[in-house]
Amino acid sequence: MTPINAIIISEEKDTLTILKNFEEENFMIIKIVADAFSVIDAITIIKLKKPDVIFLDIVLKDDTFFEMLEQLEFSIPKLVFFSANENDAVKAFKHNAIDFILKPIDFNAIILATYKVIRRTEMERSYQNQKINNINILNSINQPNEYVAVSSLDKIELIPMSEIIFCQADGKYTNFFLLNGKKIMSSRNLGEYNSILDSKYFFRIHHSYIINIRHIAKISKKDGYFCELSNGTILPVAKRRQEDFNKFIKL
Image (cartoon, rainbow, N blue to C red; front, side):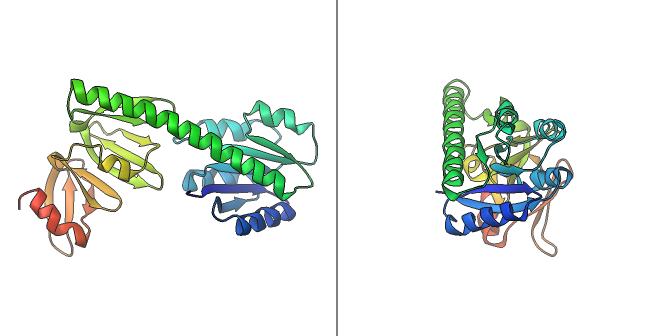
């Protein structure tokens, strides 16, 4: 099982210590990718790290933090609240918390909360993947290799493959760069799309990139191997993929 990525927001050193000790003993299920002492710092880190869960042990004066979460381009992280005041549970569950842990914190409570996050995440991913696969199957029957179903934050979009310039890995997410200048972030990883996109036109030139060869403007072999695409983006071709790429585009 892939560990879930967590961020801690807390002003309490004891909370940080307990959660990091928990991570050391349970590294198979959880990885703490960052921590922050303030909401402002946390938002920047959340956008960068895209965690699965946020452990929140801080007094929030208003709903600004939750409003900022709603504006994220990717899936909103699950929330686990910590507090010494049991009345804070009302606020926690008002904001769809996965769990509320009353301090002092014990490992059993963290274990239960973590597995709740894992279970909810797996259920959502399974449901989403089932919907996308059903759409792709129907699409392949009716219009072979013309569209791909892409699951973004709050909807599933059918994108014409001819309008995809390239795809970029972003951790467990994938960014689609389209002909109209739009960027769409998908909750599926690049490897999954490598087997979905039309193999006649799409090639994975690098661990982080899949390109649509219909949008190659120029190939440069000076100081490496690079593809310039129709939107002006220049992407590297990995050395170990160059020979296969030449065969693919029939050079």
